[in-house]
Image 1 (tube, each protein chain N blue to C red):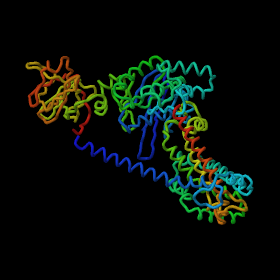
Image 2: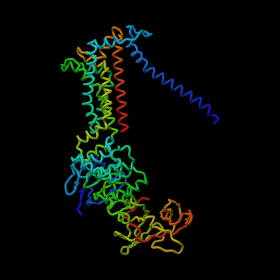
Image 3: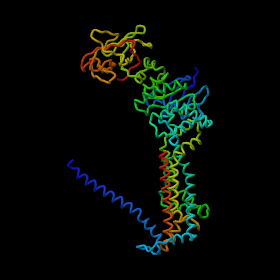
Length: 269
Length: 365
């Protein structure tokens, strides 16, 4: 009991230190984004403090910039199809890895991870060489192939990890109750790995959306959004770019909130 | 009654050295409750999984109602399984879980609904129909797993250690409940367990397995009272083993000579004079004799340990030859009203010759 006040003081101190640390961490993560959002509404072209006034001009400019819009559209096109492709290949690959034992299985599992562990430049150059060899014209479609290859590891590892945690008896129970392999996959396995597939899909989409190195080597005349931003940046940061970035942040926030609501809704069922 | 399941020379060799099931032949009658009993790794689960279609045998045939189903996948067999972890689908309600097997049979919606409600009523959980498996207790999940398997009216219900995940009290309750359920639905039950009490309490017939083979099969009382090997005698109940030699044989009565003592025993199989044998005596068939009391066999020794376990007393008695035997006594009175022998005290033990098992060969003490 004699030590109680001391303990209280030290615990209060520890709490304060911890909260300060968390506060600094959050600031480190989010202050740059606030600055970006603030400047996107600033009515001066120069990026200097203090802000001079409120304007929606940059958003208006954005609405008129067809190059930028095309780049946004291209990014959505590439990210959507790269995600779809990597899911179509990755989910069955994960199921195969999970279901069958074959010689060289562990090597195969690690090889699938290689494209994400390699620097994007290596993946980009090697795929460029291959496309040249086969005689493909570089276009957004070659970018899609490149992204899908690089992202395959994300999907396979996520889905495989979930399958490993799924009791084998679930599928056996479905068989036992008269479901064939296909039915039991649709009715029992798929619903239980759904969140892993959605999660891997979202992650793939985001990674593909802001990917530069692989895109740099594999794209033809079309530009994706990060490539466009990168190229305009050489002429200095314009508030227009801030406006685009703010819109992306807003869209991400909506997605995150939606994801939280969806997962919470499932738990309450 | 006809055989519903016939296993003929069934084997499952996982590799030349790893043998799951080795040349097992077994016939199960329609409506019977059969238990496969044995320690882990004895092949009992593999045998059950082969009947269910989850493992392919490496040799032999499985007949279900006279039809060869050896190579049929699980979804084409009229058997259903209650899994050890219940394997309830977490993303479905209890009603959907129980109805899933009927949906696969392509029954109509209203028909499924009535059957599901009937099955849930059978296990007294009809009020849980809209809940999820995660919201139920272990015992309730167990009953849902049963309902889900029974609702399809299988020819045979397979139960893979169905009570092992429950706590002791609930397990005791469920043993009786399962037995009653078996009587009510009239389906053949084949259960796997490593718990001898479970096997004795619930089954019509027990199949004791050892290293992939059937060690002995029979009614619970036959296995308990007439074990054919020390393995069975020790797996079902407890048995004291004493090594000895047949000194003389007179009809079915033999005298077994042991280290400084001899034991009269009634033989169930013939032994010749001089054969090395092991005598087996159950602890509850040995009684401590009062002064002047006599018995078919009298062994003297000293009390080495007294173990009190509520229901009774177990004495460990050291014989002159150095062997220790256990003797069990149920306490009709409270411990304070009972005279308890003290450690080191000499005692005389009585055993009747008909209660001595005689096994061929000697076992390491």
